[in-house]
Image 1: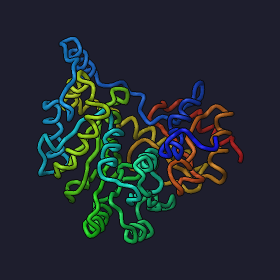
Image 2: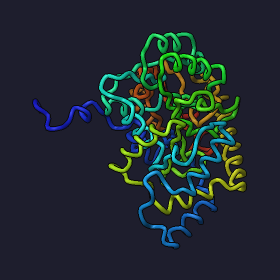
Image 3: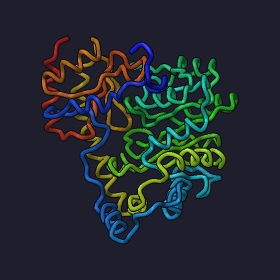
Image 4: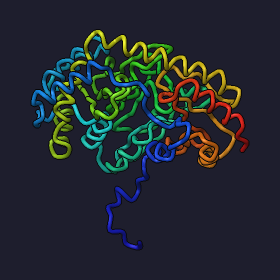
Length: 377
């Protein structure tokens, strides 16, 4: 169509690669999905049903119910060491993705630079492009386990970002950033007066090292989290954001009032149960099972892919392959395995694939390994 009837902001967007390849995974061994195959905790489901039966079916405050924001506040102060918060500096929405969208739309004008680690989750770049921002890719290397190195910091130092994205543990690589790495990022952000968006959705799915919330070091941080990965609640669509600078949350809330209005009422009330002590056992069991899957895969994948580091968190591998990643994933589909090409995750993702072990038991992973070993490209 010579003169498109559509806005330029959608002309530059592609379908989410994760959703696209997940849709192709029917009747395959599915290594695409960004979730676990664990059920949501019974306590949360029962609390959600009780809220529904109890008439919690109407609009809530746009920022979210106070009872839930109070629990989030306690958690962020106690576990993440993020201070100078109160319930008005916290917003609840329909998933962490919506929180990220609101933060970008609140902060980024046309041609503002946004620094994104490369590779990164596919939606970061798209959200920035919707806001007409300019993406600055911060290169990461497979041979370093996708941990920021001098090249990463050199590009960051020589850019002028209004916003810096951080995601640790990382999707798609599983990399976990150390305190020293976070301190170097904060040093640059402070000197450039940049905001940081810290996506901590995989915070509890960590095997080596420990989780560091960059918001504990730097006030100009929007901390983003949610319930989808830790509690296997992807379909509940519930996430939250927090920032010590109230005006940031106020502006995000303006966008929320004019878009999704509020998160689903009874889901918010049900999520309060996620903060009970007995839920911790559920999370510990899930992480223990995921660690077994990771270790099993690592021992087998390193025989197939020459450049492979053991990821410290999340539930992904991002191996370097010796062929075109899209053609390779198409070949895998023909042979009964679904994985996601690395190219949509950023320029450094080219020639890699994302393998998710969140939704597959060991027996299926074993079958997948045999197929991966048989593929010649």
